[in-house]
Image 1 (cartoon, rainbow, N blue to C red):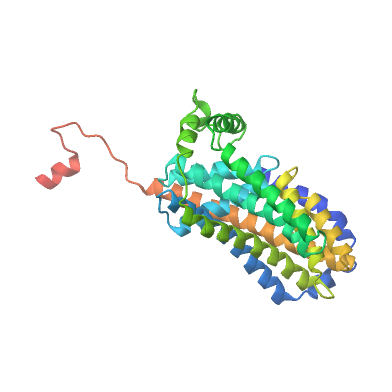
Image 2 (cartoon, rainbow, N blue to C red):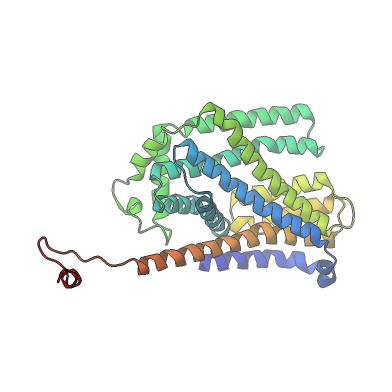
Length: 349
């Protein structure tokens, strides 16, 4: 939780210059088109829920059926951790999701496989589509965009094949254990403390999971839908604050700038570089500086701070319910054979 507060502090510190450039900030927010703000919120939540559905379908591909509400709760908390912790946020989010699913009866290898594949598939789809988006906004000619997309698709495929090799998986296991020993929530787990780490054998089983060929179009469609919904959430934020027509080219470039900053993870959720890049793109696209600044604050407040806060609320609720179940669970005393408790004896008499 302290890391969450620190992450919000970094965001406020980095956003302060942007907010200072807005003249009459209160009037700007009052003049927002609130119907578009509502649309942005719905789209942002739908994007995260769609990613959770992708995760659930991957679990089904491995033969495990988990309730959608359970997967979504784990998904929201994992996103909160990934968007809060600097540098290791994505890894910490994956580690939490694996541990949470394991606590709900899912085999460790299955939970690790589904979580990792969801993250890798999401990254690969965005990387491959980025040149197409740049072509759509007029920054790349179609031969160059096609060539870059094909090249990135080939690199993604090679990376996928490489990650299925035992040596590569062993290296990943070692890195995860080293990282886990420095994380306060995970460092006491047995897979981090034990030598050799059970994670090696788990990753060996991971290599055996393969979705059926007919499942891939659906998985890619859910991944693409998650990105499209998030992109449209940014567009709705711009429409809510802009004084003119939405500049699609500027929104596209700004969106890629935000996602690149989040991917690098120098700060929690790319705080600082993400806002700077998005603000510059929107201003270059013809939106006035005050309107662009409000759009940036609105989008990041919804998709980062809002969804992160929702994830921590879900975490608190689930933790409270789990503790309550443990307290309400009746204690069982071991009774030696041939003897009975006083209560049983009383009934017998």
